Amino acid sequence: MDQIKIRGSDRTPEIDFDFGNNVFRISGESYPENVTEFYREPVDKLQAHLLTQSTSDIELVLEFVYFNSSTARILMELLELMDEAASAGNRVVIKWVYPEDDDYMAEIGEEFREDVRKATFELVVTD
Image (cartoon, rainbow, N blue to C red; front, side):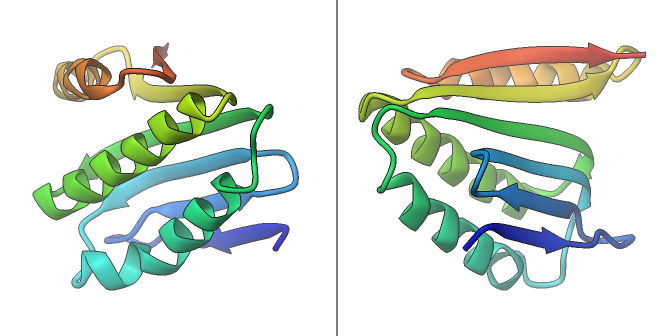
């Protein structure tokens, strides 16, 4: 299991999970018809992979244009997985990437950051 790549669409984000380098990226819009079905395989494989890591550098990059409330629940699950990985001794960095002029995504990133206890959560502003 070296990589999961899912091309984004008008309703679904691009997913690029590089297990070999421990870099996991989700970007774009996320309001698939069935959120649980769309995310289940990548999240399950990520969870299984993280259980095998103990002193690794792990990076999760989240760069959304828009996501719905069902996606927000999946994101909380991902953040919990990252916190668990950090608790297991890994160096985990979560990057919440958003445009400088997107106050809404900035605010949501700040809210998610409050829920992260062990992993490092960075707000990354782009031009």
